[in-house]
Amino acid sequence: MNSKFTWLDSYFYNPNLIQKCLAFLLLPLSALYLVLAILNSKFRKKQDFKIPMISVGNLTVGGSGKTPMCKAIAKFLKKECLKQEIYIVLRGYKRQSKGLKVVKFKDEILCSVNESGDEAMEYAYCEDISCVIVSENRSKGILEAKKLGAQVILLDDAFSKFHIKKFDILLENTIRPYFNFTLPSGAYRLPLRYKKKADFVALEEEDFLRYSMCKENMKAILVTAIAKPFRLYEHFIKARACYFFKDHYKFKKEELQNLLKKHNCDTLMLTFKDFVKVKDMGFKTQIIELNIELKDKLKNAIKKYIKDSDEACKN
Image (cartoon, rainbow, N blue to C red; front, side):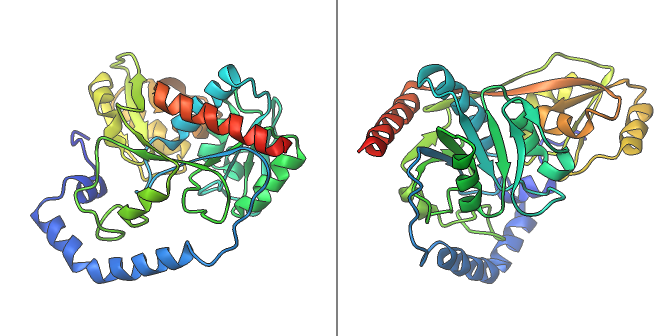
């Protein structure tokens, strides 16, 4: 695939005339979605779990870098704030299980990627995170984390959970949606004005830097099932061919074998989120490392929050 954008990426971020017209035709649905999103964020009693909690979220649909940001924060907390038990709670999107499930505890992975979801399993391989819990009900997940000994909890994609007392970091990328509309006319899940509800709006290139690394390999095909695959654009030319699947897609072994055979290749070039779904299939793989570097302003805000939270919990 030679195009930098998938159709959906193009629709949200670089629409052609037809896509612009479609966006305006869908505005009545966006208005309905907007009302429902606002109602869903109100009328719930605030919960204080008496433990430091940092939420990493965004206003748009997927692909803003929440996973590498959470991993970067976990690494920073472990190194700078001397927190030994960093837990993460997330929904576990597209997993083939229901309810609360402990994916990792200490150094032991307790379930399969099908049960956890790809993002949760990626966290499970992060040595700076002691425990990974998936739960549709974040409050139950937080209580389980406290029960298991969490000292600080990271919440992946919980900005909209306004009923939970937490430190909200809202990611804002350099590439922004073309329209400031909510779904389906635009990429926003919540109104843009909700940005004011964040405790810290983290601006890409100002508060954090995003970078990725991968060596060229003309015996590899790049295969990915992440949101916004155009973020891997610099690596497209490093493989013989590129294939994009929908976000969280469950790869099939035969399907990947056929793609390798088609291009006479022997290696899959993947992000780690993709790798956890194919690691037991026997393929030769090459990882595209996706990393985030925290800048001082964001680091200092996190440090201050942890310090203030610790003092509040003592009183």
